[in-house]
Image (tube, rainbow, N blue to C red; front, side, top):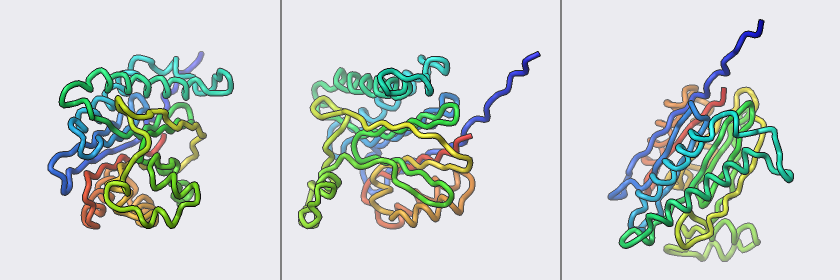
Length: 254
């Protein structure tokens, strides 16, 4: 007789604070029942940024709720790309279509960044567009798993360190990809195996811009519960003077 076993559900907690901004344009999701975790940062200064970020989060939730476990296919591959990565890419293209569909009138300029994590069967699919980030704490070491789609990051990667130092004003926060009606929304997507004790942090730039990697790593190591870690990270970012909305999602895979 076969005995069905239920895989333990990941533990996760998310928190978002408005901070010094007049409106919170960040959105997030912690759907452990779906294995889906998302943060999105509505484009600062754009009309409807909060609408775009919420729309993207809701669209991803709805997509993976409809797809279900059996169709995600972490192992199966087509042309060298896992079906899970293909599903994530399709979900993000659906997000772009939804934003384009709603981007009319005063909402025409709206856009958002995105960082998304999908957990299934000992694997993680990581995807991002823009400068919202995913970090992984493994064996006490914190690693940034995404590279910002931003002017600063791309200049740094091309060796333009001195030019980056001279950037001022809005250029310091300019993203080169976003989910909007007018920008490249192509996501970077990767899949990796998870290990026992792994912890993921998804965050907007209101957090990563205020805290250095060692400060984040220290909090993620000290506070064992995702809720405690997420709350402390947001609290410290605000205390450090973050001028943006601050959002953190901490995920402990099962």
